[in-house]
Image: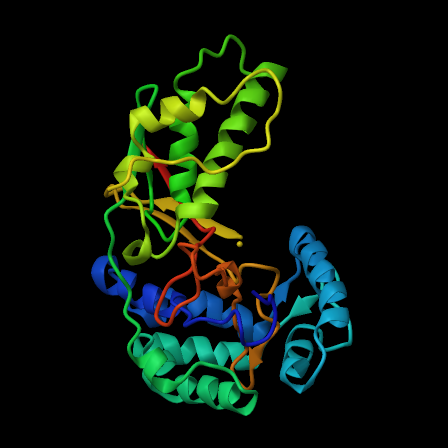
Length: 319
């Protein structure tokens, strides 16, 4: 898949997720919750060292990769002086502040059914993109049941596919069959790296939209399959290939309060600023998660309408 432009853009889900989480668990209005972000967008945010370095890396790449009118608004929004903002400089976006305010006031309805949706679709149609009003209007957040394995007495929970948290659980299943004499030693690192390589090989082949997966999660997390994969790890590093299980992109926030509520929250535009497309008058930088689709018609993650791609985002909870 292509990394830039409209090809890798799918319907953004983050604004609907904010509204859904607020409605289900929040005690404050979304306008209050989002007020600090709106203020930063309006008044400015001082660029921190890590953000500044990564911003400059993205700018240097985009200035060579993004050619054409559809990308001009990215540079106007995120490089208004013809360069990436320097560390310590204030960056602001009045357009983004208005967008966030509208999302807060309408509980994200403007993003999917209102004025913001109109701007996204107009921008898409102007540059032969694929998003239409029906795509945005029919999007709904989905509540899912987490998946888990027990690793040496700890229950480790992950979000299920199409996220790749399953990879971490498969790696732990492989590793729990080994004895680690020392935490920091070459053999310990070797076993962990090889287990992750095997798990990622399976993840890249099998993880997709759960409605399209050819294998069930239980089979991929079975003790028998973990034992089969564990046998492949020897003294030498290997080139991992996906196995045959039984048939059947980032900013991160973790917080808790005194009442026992906990949030493990992650969202990302995937690669740098995403697709390189910024919707005019909104400050919205569209993601490029669709780049994770495969164009192989026989692959589990093959591109299809209404399908969610393999997703690198996952959050982990231990208990």
